[in-house]
Image 1 (cartoon, helix red, strand yellow):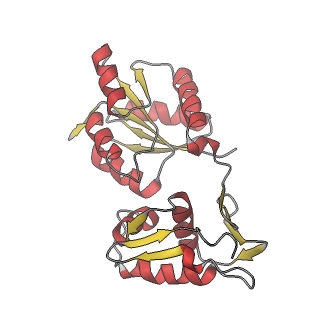
Image 2 (cartoon, one colour; image 1 turned 45 degrees about the horizontal axis):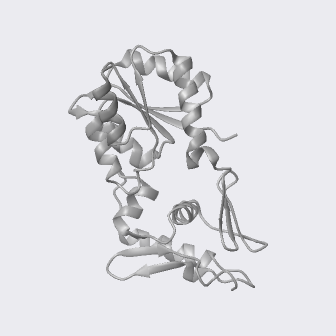
Length: 236
């Protein structure tokens, strides 16, 4: 069973401590943020499986962060449970309309929250993922960090593996070098965009065996960046 990572966004340290203890006892990994800026950085860098989001936060509120995420193609699928002392129906409707998946009012019982988390994760792609990705004859096992093409194992470095994982989970869409840097290296890692090109070349070289050639699965999109597609390669 996969271990999920939960991001707790709340400006009250006592609540974060309580949630961390309850979540860790339920075998979840826990990340913490006390404001919108830190939360957005952790979402970009760590890609949590679910977020517990307080309504009132320094420098804005949870609704502002939620609106921002829903405009971001790479973060809009993140499941979110709002945690708030606001109990009116209008507040609940507003949170759900903006994009929250569930709404829990304070004070709450940790056991009830854990049950809601489990139920939400079961409904999301992350909760159904067994760690295996398939694109035609290309297979990636996220749990063992193994990649095979047909019946042959492929050898690639950790960065190329992360690139391939991102591409296979976001196929048929073009991404700029900046977007790839943010998603694969992290938003706070400052490296040149041409570094992406170097690792793309290495990834392409790795996508070939004696009998199958998937190097063209990583396509250059002129003026944009790169796109991953195995169309036309299935019978290669």
